[in-house]
Image (tube, rainbow over all chains, first blue to last red; front, side, top):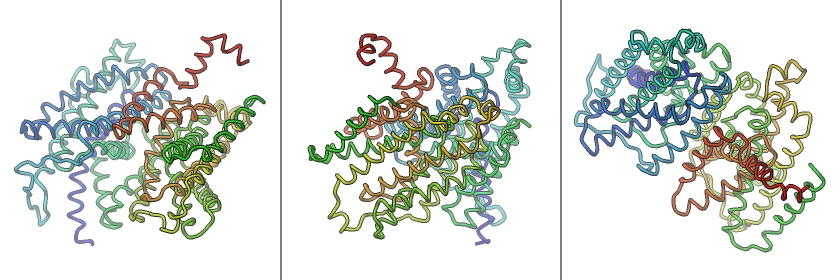
Length: 291
Length: 310
């Protein structure tokens, strides 16, 4: 049992990077807009299908398809903000979170039903020519695609970090997250910062979906699972630190690997959920506090 | 409830109780059983989600526990009503064990916390009981749909009665005070945690009884199926579409929901979720009162009808 642990840990770290990426988008949206979009997992699912169909119909390499899927999901994010989530930002914080949760819930049902209708409930994944390649590091097998996915995820996290630090509108987004009223008073277009933050969050979900469809598999019903993963990571990492969120993803990946090795594969999910509930209850208010 | 309301309700239940004698079509009875169980489940959700305003996304856990315990005891030879009561007792014990912790969470955090709890239970049950549960051949040979129908009717009536009592009771008023402003309620002497736990007990007992009726009704299903999030989602959709925190909303919502679901399922399986998801979003954004509010507004628009009714 112990002998498989190092291998499990490697696989846990690899998928943990995707957990971190999935959580980064949700964390950005929640931290800035105080909008809890529980349809985040369904947006990841859409990104996955985007890459899948680009590969199946046009033969586009999944990593290259990021260049198409990210802009498309960015635009989708803006549309979702204007049509749905923009409505709730006029409420005060508590009502805002609760109503956005309900809207996300409805949206998740719609996107799931739509995906089943359009693409059937089958599980799919992208099998490229290099899909089976592995690299051996110190006796451990590392699937090449998943390693590349981890690198891409880290690259996107770094890009997000730079955007939020250096870009004019990135700074506006952070200002709106800290105190939207003060931001408004200093002449920042808070509404525009909100749209941009929501679009960025959706774009990150799309990118995460692409990586999920290449190293793992997608189906219309993966949404809830990925939303929960993202929420668990946010609970572990708190809000406000991009790299912190990524590290939280790695921690969840490792925790899952350990529990799968100790308690058996089927309990992989349970460990994360139990940690989530316990941490949530232990720090009910301070948990989502900004660092 | 007014005297007219009481008489009307008794008449409706009396009429429904005689349906199995007049109607001998299984599809009609199956449809009615589903509607009645949905009413019971939605009303049970409405107590904590509607009156107390705590969006519980782990409600399926209570339904599932009721189903699991009832099914196990009933197949082992316990009378079904006793088995259902045992299921309700187990579910209530579980609710009390986690309720104190869960109610430390407010608003959306309560929602995602309970969602996690529900999933923990579903996955664990799916792992420990992976085999499909089918009724023994002797039970199938003596299976009577009418019995299931009357059980579902009793439960639906019980849940409507419970919510009707609740809406005028001290408990119900306290819960609504908590929903509107928890701090203010606490400050004016409402025992917030105690009332929330009382509401949870009532809600859980009804949900577990509905689960028990489901276990008695269904011939074969996977035990983890009864713990699936779709039971929670159904209850949430029905309650919000009908009118969250109202007495009649979940009843109206359930009839509308099951009717449209069954109608659409003839051609497109699961297509109803597309429509209801969109309808749900529209109601949250534009019409927080749901179908009940539409009915009230229509009545105001038609003063003649209002005069007739008063």
